Length: 33
Image (cartoon, rainbow, N blue to C red; front, side):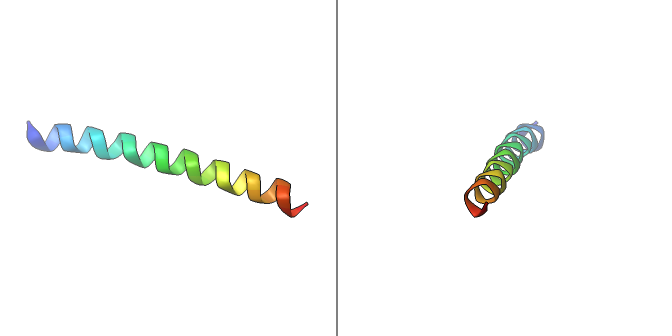
């Protein structure tokens, strides 16, 4: 049970990190040009 909850939280955190990373790349591209 604990593993499933931890996995869900990790998955959510990972999605947020990926989204933030994508946003940063986009921002970098805009600023770079």
